[in-house]
Length: 245
Image (cartoon, rainbow, N blue to C red; front, side, top):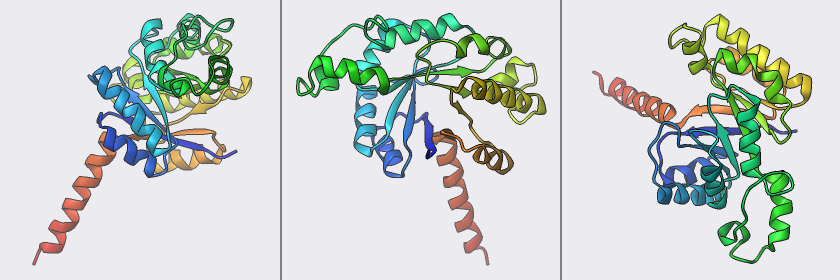
């Protein structure tokens, strides 16, 4: 099975989202947890992801049923839940993401059905397998509750949040700390034990080699803001060096 690679989008721009898809990424996480994005801009970013050929997932601030329903009605293919620390949070998100009898999502037409081209019965059936519910584990409490979280029907995958985990462990902003690495390995092992995919975010060449060696189904390639800034700085540095006498 091929690995699906994605990016966290922190620069809310439809053009950038389309470019990310054109660059070959399979999914983009549009961030509503830390980034102020208007509903109109979010819809444009979702459309741009579709045009670029990648899945749009939305990281919502919390498991709010109305917000989850709206982002899915706008065309998002998944919802990402930050700071998950209980199975109940995932159960509420799954219920909000799926139609009865599997959940409590309300039905509408609109763009997700091609404005009527796809019958509602077909869309309901398709959405059962195509909508992803992703839980981020970013704290000690989340790690302790992970066995119960993984038992929730409808959970699609687990995404690590090493930086926030380091802060929660009172290590400061040190996502590369050995205790954080041990926690990531524990997460991955628990996911493996029940057949739920684990999505890592490699931060060093050594981590990249390790996670790729596990034949992952999902990988996060970082955040677009940091990657863009690093590329811009490196390009400026190259030109400055070439201009030196």
